[in-house]
Structure formats: C-alpha cells, structure tokens
Amino acid sequence: MLRYVNSKKMGKSDLGWLNSHFHFSFADYYNPENMNFGVLRVVNDDMVQAGKGFDTHPHRDMEIISYVIEGELTHADSMGNKHTLTRGQVQYMSAGTGVRHSEYNHGDTLLRFLQIWILPDKAGHKPNYGDFRFKIEDRENRWLPVVTGVGNTDSAAPIRINQDINAYATMITGGGSLDFTAASGRQAYLIMIEGSADINGITVGMRDALEIVEDKVSIKAGDTAHVLVIEMAKEARD
Image (cartoon, rainbow, N blue to C red):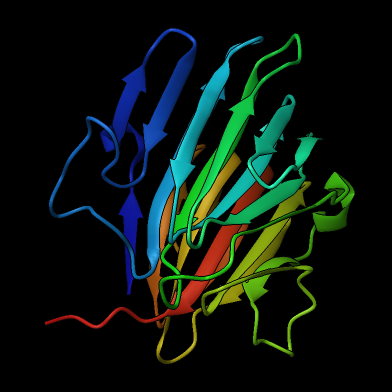
C-alpha cells in the first residue's frame, strides 16, 4: 500500500528567521489525523537564516535525528557537546531522562535540515549524543545505511538509536533508478529531499513524501533524486 503526501498540503510556519514544513502535527499545526507514522513522530523541513537558530531548550524521552541538506548546523548541549555539521552529515541525540540543547546557523548562508523525532522503545534511557560525517558521494546511486536500532547486528549503519528503525539515504543521478521494499510486517516513510522521481507511477517532488506499507517501490529519478527512507515495524491499526 502506498499513500502520497503532498508537501503543498503540509503544515507550514514562517517566522522570518525560520521557515518550516511539518510532515506531522507540530507547533501551531495540529491535525489529529496526522500525528505520526508508526514510531515516526516528527519530520520538520527547517530553513534557518544565517546567524539565527533555536535557543537552548529541553527534550526528554525522544530519539532526535538531524539530517543536514545545505549550510551549517551547530549543535550544543548540556552534556558538553558542541559540533558543526554540513551537507549530507547526520547527528543524533537520545534525549532519554532529559537534556538541553541548542541548534544554530552560525554560517553566512541559509541552513536547511530535516529534524526527525522517533519515539523510543521505552522511557528513561541515558541521554546520548553522536554524529557521523558522511560524504555526499557515499550515497550516490546506492542506498547508504545511516541509522538503525541499537540491537541490529545486521546493519552497517554507524548511528544507533533506541528503536527498531532503519534509515537509508540515496542520491540518484543521471535519471537512474533504485528499488526499495518494505517487507511483510514493515512500513517506511520516504522523503524526497531534493529533485523529483517517478515512484510506481506517482510523481514525487521536492519535500513530498510517500507512506509505504508492506510494498515495493521503484524510484526512477528525474535528473537527480535525493531521498531519505525511514523504515520501521508496521503500525497496529484498530
């Protein structure tokens, strides 16, 4: 089963320094029928102006992933971490019992990144932070394993979080194609970060998404398709 998510119908916010598209209910955008997709609770496509950012604020009991699309993202937290990431690089933070952090664009160009929140497997984990500086070419015309669950010994993904998920990135160039399968009992959320593609006859453009439930898709890129897929256990429905 596939369901197309049109970015034009997503929640939006424009604060001047911050322009956001909300894949799921967040901040002033509230839709009780669009709260999550399985354990995936938040996907925000954030664009932050130079010299601006999110002041120090608290989180707890959430697995948080930031995927940098363009510009520079500087993270600082109450655990003593302070790091700057650039295009194609990924950071994660297990908020667990509680952590405070800030996210800033200290660069002189626009910052665009995906802010992703995933519900943990249980409350009360010890807070943790890490990042991985993937090269953008690492994902060219292939699936790059980015994130997986801490107990998954079969995945090469370097980032491990407290939930049974797998995240993969790709940059399909030259009009090429790649397949992806959400196996029996699994589902996936596909985000078109940049570019466009024909996916099983559906035209998916920049910021659009697809919900994939126990199905296989063939992604046929236009000139380029920069894609992130977050795969997880199938959500139980009443």
